Length: 128
Image (cartoon, rainbow, N blue to C red; front, side, top):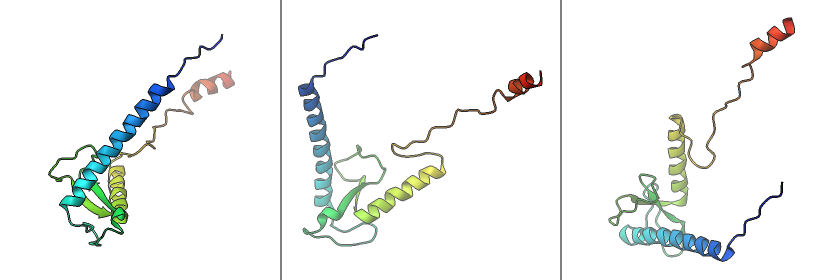
């Protein structure tokens, strides 16, 4: 049976991808710029101080881990150096894993294969 090829509107696809990137960048820079204006450039965990030459290493951490929750008062943000930020997310992932919740795209699926499901029937057939 021949397969039917569908044509892809590359111009439309490019437009959608460009808009998604633009929105993501706008959202990302928006709260970062706000947080950098609101808070002193000091890591909230290790107290490392930052200046214009190394502020790129200072990240905005979402306290409730919801990157889409960005209240204008900054109540869901804290500034962390990249090392403390990574550590915070690792600790959160480990805490969730203790409760059986796997984070990220590498969600584990439960096994459904039952290797001994028909063993009784197979043994009956060999006895006969």
